[in-house]
Length: 224
Ligand SMILES: Cc1cc2nc3c(=O)[nH]c(=O)nc-3n(C[C@H](O)[C@H](O)[C@H](O)COP(=O)(O)OP(=O)(O)OC[C@H]3O[C@@H](n4cnc5c(N)ncnc54)[C@H](O)[C@@H]3O)c2cc1C
Image (cartoon, rainbow, N blue to C red; front, side):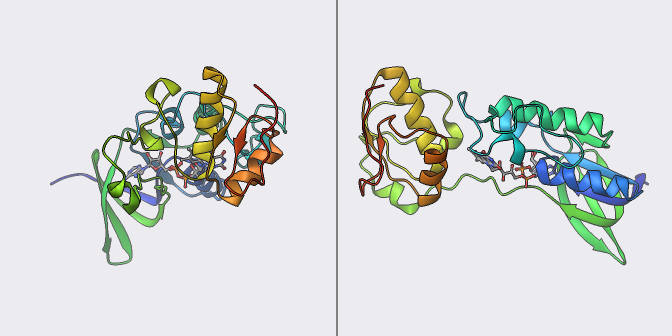
């Protein structure tokens, strides 16, 4: 018969939510396990594009008990974020098991059974902190001519992958455009941005880089 490990609580996912929950649970004295599918804590950030910097300054990127190791108003790179999460798990002695994917969670009386790639765990409580970062391609993508190359931000790494006009929404597109413009000396592009993304960029002082919203609210001015 298969050995079934027992825990008071299991946290599924070792991202920001999973790690900070694990921190509070261990402080409360619970016997827990954190199961993380990726080989290293922080890999979800490491996989993102090379030039990515967080749009939230370091003071907002801190998890409970360990300040982000950067000036509070600075914008960490994605690798600094990834390494911070990994260091956090280590310094807080969180019982994270990397490379373990949870396949299913089922109810068994007053407990739960988790089937994982490393065996079965029975637990009184389960916290699902598996994130919501899934590739979403809007329907409109299917109606764009095949001559126009399309790239989802999840598959973007560097400007060498991009050619021609960019079209999209949100902070991801603006990050990419800003980088592309700097590398290729492009002085102005027309971008569709959510008001949220626009606000972040204005606060970060990117006004003047040449990114312009369709309503013209974002002036293009200086050459790069
Ligand atoms: C391009 C981009 C830029 C962003 N920039 C910022 C920013 O500047 N500031 C900011 O605050 N937020 C930013 N975000 C959002 C931020 O990444 C998320 O809000 C945050 O990571 C959510 O944390 P989480 O712990 O809920 O999920 P995640 O970080 O997604 O962590 C979930 C973890 O669960 C693991 N997992 C999933 N399924 C399983 C399973 N079945 N078994 C075991 N493990 C599993 C995953 O491997 C992952 O490590 C950005 C997001 C993107 C896509």
